[in-house]
Length: 286
Image 1 (cartoon, rainbow, N blue to C red):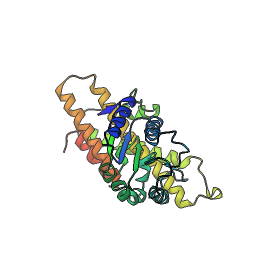
Image 2 (cartoon, rainbow, N blue to C red):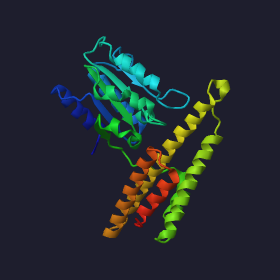
Image 3 (cartoon, rainbow, N blue to C red):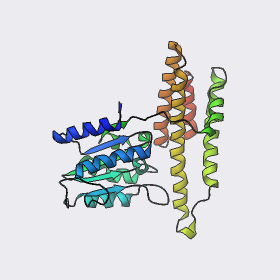
Image 4 (cartoon, rainbow, N blue to C red):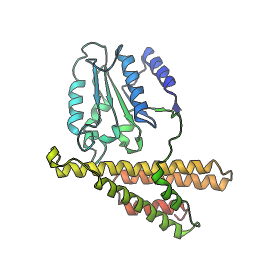
């Protein structure tokens, strides 16, 4: 269930006053700025003063050229968390864009699991993500989740409209299964080509070829998941204009299939096979 920012703050303060505060929270929402702002507000409350610049406040965000959160960043955070608080009774750490710990082989996320499960005494961890579907289940299970209610449903980017037109056209049946699979994989190929054609940092900027590949792959993974999230929202939007039980059932089937596709891609299952299976499920063929 999603809550407005002020409701989350009130619940958080109430838990703190009654000594029922958890040690790790996952804050999610539709906007990185809104989620980070909420985390900063909670950190400021716990520290008893402005978080930025406070000696007991720590923040981790993607800073490498590959736009990942690295193992080194998380290990540095762990070392800091084991220090005694300097001023406040509690240390607070915010991890922004936490899903970027889980890109590639998720080394950074795996390195932080034990600390996330059993942090040092007097530690509060605030994990922020607008793409929680990219987080490892082991990360999510170790946090108390607070979903920030979006002020408005985000609109899909304009470049997706031609794809939507292809996806929702055609008569139901096996032919549409493979037409949809082709449309989706082609759309993702276009995204990858655009990422590869961008002006990116090179060796003269101190970026190795391996790091550049990691940058492109990480951005592609996020764009691919964002496509599926937008597609799910489009199904819900269309469902509001239909009242039949048949439509409601098909919408739910499609959304579940797309969620399963997101999970399959997260575990590096072959993209084409995963897409074809999802399209078969959406069409009710399996």
